[in-house]
Image 1 (cartoon, rainbow, N blue to C red):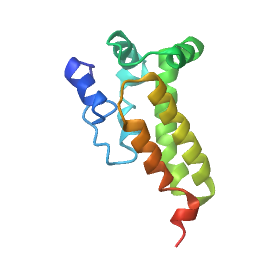
Image 2 (image 1 turned 90 degrees about the vertical axis):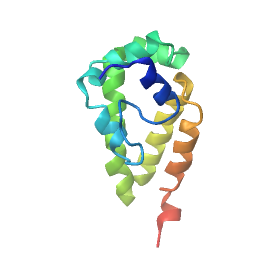
Image 3 (image 1 turned 60 degrees about the vertical axis):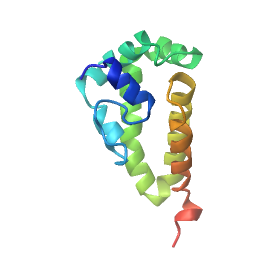
Length: 132
């Protein structure tokens, strides 16, 4: 799954993280990142070459764990958010992890308001609001 210019524009518009994934499914972003091109770090390298990702936070993360580690970490976190948010005992941990992930996205990617939208979405999982 290459990262052509059309995919970059779709990514910047918040349509998908990788390829043609439907963002309305909470697990879709994590499942899409199970693609070999994402897990190998090639997608992030291509995005970096197109200046979609960058900045000091991204540079420090890449320097510490290289693009493959960063790609695998993002996939693991996004896949882990689904069970963390679905269980009441771990929901606050999932919210904190999701907020940290989307803060990192906002600080290192050109994604407009997507991270703010996701932060607001995560607040819907706050335990006090989900009690019946």
